[in-house]
Image (cartoon, rainbow, N blue to C red; front, side):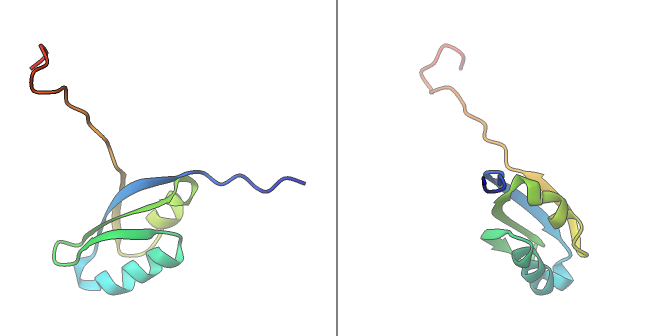
Length: 82
């Protein structure tokens, strides 16, 4: 019997209610988020989570948005595209 497939962790950036930051971040951790950075005054944090857990994060009361990290690569400074 095979194990259920889990999606690979991806980077996410979240905006949450800054007045309830501590409460919301604990709920996010319980939902599977591994926190990598916190900005409580701004009400934002970053972390990694299995992609199939994103709907669970979005459903937590106090979460305003969940955005997937985007990686943008620029050409080297000496590239003709500069």
